[in-house]
Image 1: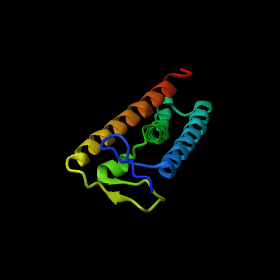
Image 2 (image 1 turned 120 degrees about the vertical axis):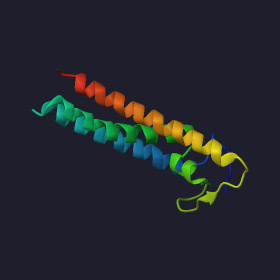
Image 3 (image 1 turned 90 degrees about the vertical axis):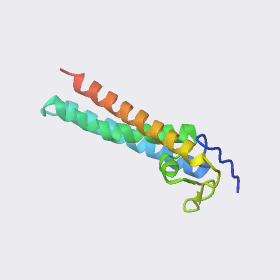
Image 4 (image 1 turned 45 degrees about the vertical axis):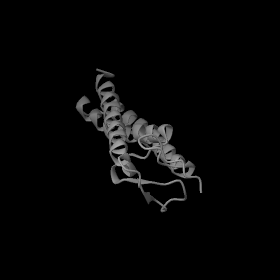
Length: 126
């Protein structure tokens, strides 16, 4: 086991990172598919705001993979450098607050990216 936990910086290992990267790919595919379908449809352009959710999900997956930090684990005070299901509690004093701050940053950035993608989708083709 390689335990490289750094408060607010790194709380997941290679398997967890790969899983979040895959989640980013899936979110991107869903965003592109939904966006293309909505752009081709006769629905009101406001319906294109729906791409915000999968776009935010894709952004979250990619951000977590890139930063080697799981936002969910950060909120819950956990870390995992082993196989899935082997999460361990953070035992370093004060580290949970740093992890929560990083988790909030990831969540806010993902939401902003999702909203930005959605606003572009609404503006396109007007």
